[in-house]
Amino acid sequence: MVDTDLIDRKATGQAAGDLRHTREPDDRDVLVDIQDLCTYFYTPEGVVHALGGVDLRIGRGRTLGLVGESGCGKTVLALTILRLIPEPPGKIVRGKVLFEGTDLLSLDQTGIREIRGNKISMIFQEPMTSLNPVFTIGFQIEEVLMLHQSHRAPTRKQARELAAELLDMVGIPYPGRRIDDYPHQLSGGMCQRVMIAMALACRPSLMIADEPTTALDVTTQAQILALMGELKEELNTSILLVTHDLGVVAQSCEDVAVMYTGNVVEHAGVEDIFSRPLHPYTRGLMRSIPTVEARRRGEQLHAIPGNVPTLRDMPKGCTFHNRCDEVMDICRRERPPMFRPHPDHCVRCWRYANG
Ligand SMILES: Nc1ncnc2c1ncn2[C@@H]1O[C@H](COP(=O)(O)OP(=O)(O)OP(=O)(O)O)[C@@H](O)[C@H]1O
Ligand code: SF4
Ligand SMILES: [Mg+2]
Image (cartoon, rainbow, N blue to C red; front, side, top):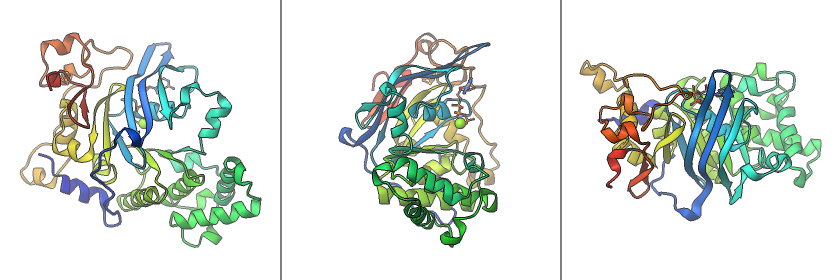
């Protein structure tokens, strides 16, 4: 039994507000519709099937948490949406990424560049590696504004004023002064705020955040997540939040997609995922969350047995079958499709073949 209250408390610290909603997305509210998306890496050791036919929808103005063990394809999915996969060795082999109805995979380089930064922006885990150490943070935000908001044609002076406003918006104290700071003069949490300011500079419809708080302490993490939630409400931005932390998901996301070996194995609203996880893998992830209650009872932390199979050589049938304690004959022979045992709750497991 998962103590979701505890997860909430663990993730929030004191600063984060409750950002969850109970409404489920319907077809009219879909911002991104990913269909049968496959991305492979052609390495000397063999073909890495990093994404093996992902189907996923992101609702407008909603936060979707993308979770799963290391190496399951979360970052590759984020990079594929933005067409940032290094080719070679990578290749987007097939599928569609429909964004506001346009297939991003069919755009030419100019088209996709216009989308990046204008309509979709990305925040990476390590702000220090994303910010340029030789330019002031103000200059870097101004560059984004000048480059991507040509329709507003801001002058350098206007861009500077807007940059200071953005720094204020993301909670940087004394923005008028700090605008001339270099990245090394700011703490990790502040740099991440600057990254958020840059990501929001063009008021994107979608913000992709890949482990945006993993490198930060718990309090700063809670503040950054709260900030992203507030800005999301203000700008009606959708967020794809990549994280391995189920506590962060419980607090910050409305929808959850669980990935395993390059595919989504379960997708539902956050309440559903925590109150009735259906996929044996999701249940395993839930049981591996430490709780004070379990520690008091002297219980060992649960670990999912076995290892994730290599994406170069995946087992036949369900890719989880060698670790699953509910495995059936069919699981070893045939790959399960996505079933929908409840409205708005999908699961890729033969156990739900009959509803
Ligand atoms: N440039 C590359 N060349 C070869 N293989 C790659 C490349 N980039 C990613 N991969 C492979 O794609 C798979 C998915 O990797 P990905 O980085 O998406 O995992 P992840 O779920 O983000 O993991 P983590 O939680 O550790 O960040 C892995 O097997 C990885 O080794
Ligand atoms: S399809 Fe079979 S092996 Fe795979 S998760 Fe479901 S029960 Fe387990
Ligand atoms: Mg990653």
